[in-house]
Amino acid sequence: MSRKRVTIYDLAKELGISASYVSRALNDHPSISQKVIESVKKKAQELNYIHNSHAANLRQGSSKTLGVIVPRINQSFFSDVIAGIEEVCFKNNHSLIICQSHESLIQECKAIDTLIQQNVDCILISVSAETQSITHLENIKKHHIELVQFDRCLDQVDSFKVLNDNKEASYKAAKILIEQGYRKIAFLGGPSHLSIFKRRKEGFIAAIKEHELSIPYNFIVDDTLSQPKAAEAARELLSLKEPPDAFLSTSDDQSLAVLQVAESMGIKVPSQLGIFGFANEDFSSIIKPSLSSVDQRSKEIGKRAAQIYFEFILSKKPTLSEHKEEIIVSDLLIRDSSQRQE
Image (cartoon, rainbow, N blue to C red; front, side):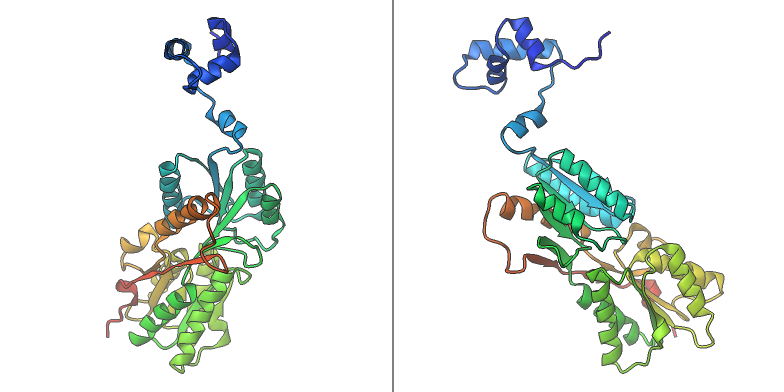
């Protein structure tokens, strides 16, 4: 049995009419009689013809498809972002192609090349931990494809951006730890070249200075985004003669690593060690003790990133602001790991 897909030309041959005539009938063109439209659609059903909407959209100058690139889809933060984007795409009759970079610049570049080849109308991206160059992002714009950055953004690229109030959220989280009586707070950061991690560190430092606490230089450790790196940093710090009594981390994966290291060293959380993280990953509320975290309202980030395309870029309305940035205010979720028990 032939596996060849039935085309519009096969329909035309069966019906003895031109392919363009068949195309107009399938699209209910007013110049085609209702009788012919019905006969063409009936034959299409008999032959299991599937309309190639992608090709049809391209003929109209649009693929009606968006692409999204995230570092990892198995993190609930990014899967919720994708869910938000997909919800908005569905409402606007657009498809979505999902790619992940696995925190690799090379794979991120390949994903962009794939989406360009697929003629997507817009690429929404949260860049990988390795990404510092802007060349591949500028290449998107050279192909006349719209660009929206979210969460992890490169400031030097001119595009719409959807961000959290990272500095303020980090400041508030650090302040909560301080108010609970923790005084020797360590900070586990991310790649220092990415602005969201810079701002989270700035918020932490602001809270420490405001309360006139003295923090050793080695209590601030950048580029520990992965669990192994976070665990290594936590073990080294907790092995000091005067170890930290709390950790503020820039991800829940780091917080989990700290908790596991503390347990292996017989350090009790939260009575001996406080922990506060970012992203409100699914596991943070169900492990024991539960992990305090910054809820970045990830689904809202995704929805807003997609809405920016449909409401402002596609409709060519004026920009949201002079800097084309939108801030999604975070929520702080205080759980067991940051509530000190004297």
